[in-house]
Amino acid sequence: MSNLFWLTDEQMERLQHYFPKSHGKQRVDDRRVLSGIIFISRNGLRWFDAPREYGPPKTLYNRSKRWSDMSVFARIMNGLAAQGTDHKTIMIDATYLKAHRTASSLRFEKGGRGRLIGRTKGGMNTKLHAVTDSLGRPIRFLLSAGQVSDYTGARILVNNLPSADWLLGDRGYDADWFREALNDRGIKPCIPGRKSRDKPVRYDKRRYKRRNRIEVMFGRLKDWRRVATRYDRCPKVFLSAIALAATVLLWL
Image (cartoon, rainbow, N blue to C red; front, side):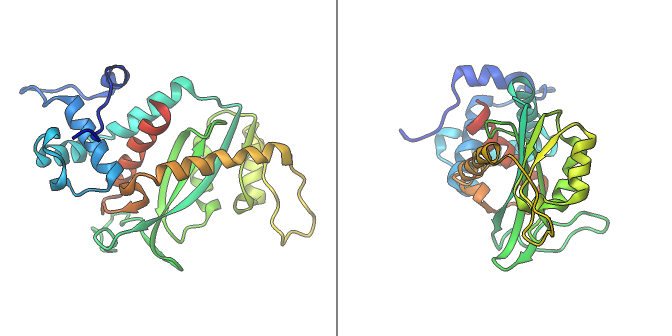
């Protein structure tokens, strides 16, 4: 098939030192299997619908699940981001991802975190919170239930923000505690004030216009059908699929 996706030799060279070492029996061809996982994620296919050129579907699924549990895909994205990120200006935002009925079971093991899926006006959703560099390339991801507010996600992410001069965010992040937390870290907030404020908040409107880059990033991620629609019940597996999509789209 001419429309199949294959990682190039240059891309594999950048990725391979993040792969876990194989123990005992030699691992199946990494390029073939990883290209198959990417093809499935991008096109929203079921695992047993994978083209035969990528090998047995069970092999693709097992590798995806095992490496997700080991946080390999997240480690790849974080490693590449650390090499080429421009931290002078960072941006924060969140978007909704529709949960398919196969993933939207709210049952979870006792003591677990649940599925991170919540009911909103648009149905069952997961919310993806993201921090990007000045070019819109992702640095941090966080999953939460759909009804969780933007600034609640920011409260979790604020302690892991990289050093930066500016942070751009929309009105959903206008909270006094968040502005104070950013100032304590030496980061200047460029966030418009909520309309309910008694006094208007001054911000750099010209700088704020650059925030569209994070919106473009979300749009490109949602071109991958297994990202735009969540089929995975396990949040860690779903977040790994998002990290893999971000790596291929924005870091390779």
